[in-house]
Amino acid sequence: MMFSGSDGGGGSLAKQIITGRWFMVFASFLIMSASGATYMFGLYYADIKSSLGYDQTTLNLLSFFKDLGANVGILSGLINESFANTGALVTCVKNFPESRGVMLGLLKGFVGLGGAIITQIYHAVYGDDSKSLILFMGWLPAVISFVFLRTIRIMKVIRQANELKIFYSFLYISLDLDGFLMIIIIIEEEGNFTRGEYGGSAVAVVILLFLPVAVVIKEENVLWKRKKQQLDNSPPLELVTQPPPPMAATSTQEDKDISCWRNIFKPPNIGDDYTILQALFSIDMLILFLATICGVGGTLTAIDNLGQIALGRVRRHGEDVNCIGKECFRMAFIIIAAVTLLGAIFSIILVVRTRKFYQSDIYKKFREEEKALETEMATARGADGG
Image (cartoon, rainbow, N blue to C red; front, side):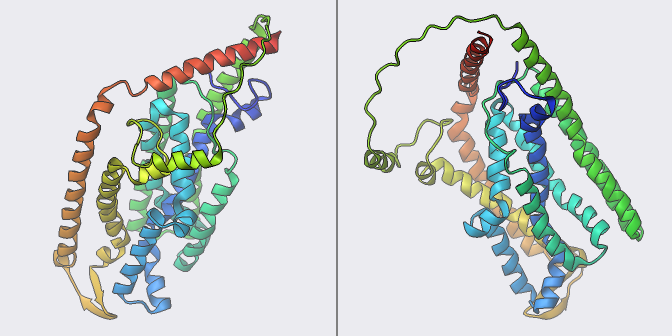
């Protein structure tokens, strides 16, 4: 099996690599890693508190709207999360429809590693200047997204036989990176690292982060050689031209708009593409939204307050109140646990509503599309050979 590249099978190996979908996966890894900066609030909250004179209540409000804007808001969401979660993640799922599960797991795994990766690079570049971390988090994700802006795109693809094996290779590399970060963080906590030692650890992290490029080059090289061989061995194909069939009358833009509005409460079958309006008024989407809010909300609350948890101190209206031990956050985590349980209930409801769909052959549509694409590509190669 092969996939259709942007050059239709010709061109150099370098072009094959840059325009191939495996390089697109690697670019998505970098973008998702950079988007993990949103989970680093606990590293710089103290600077915001001291420089702006915020008390803990105001700081909690700030962190709440930070997470709300990134996940629900429009303008702030577009700035922080849209390209990573919509551009990179959804595009990868579209390009690997039959491997969407492992694809989502890998991408979200790199988001989780993103905070540790950026922390190592930040210490190597800025030392312990936590105020510079805010600027670093501002420009790094934007630069990475801009560099790979043309790389992230939906392609016409045919599934490779060894596709899952390639994803396992990426998984093993990410586990190596995860293990190295865990070990180096433990070592850093035990002793005071110098600027040079942070630099060495940052170099190792970057090498492991870019190691998937080796897998990309290997796989794209195999595909490139296979394409060349198929082009060389393609027999000439005699083409018979026929007049095109008469075009059906197209509806006006006004009819399309009316049809779009009329279909708001008539969603397609589960698994088919929804319009934005259909998704907004879908019961399944509402349940998914509630489950996500309950699950992700508790996680983000805990992450944003890790610094406070480590210090074992809380503030009320600008005053320091000593708080030692489990009493500090007992009530907060009881509430988080209760909300998370509510999210689990919503998830169970969604499972019940969609169980028939997932018990069916959910990949049948994608296999039919791949078969049609294979036929189209074979016809194109024959035309080029003739």
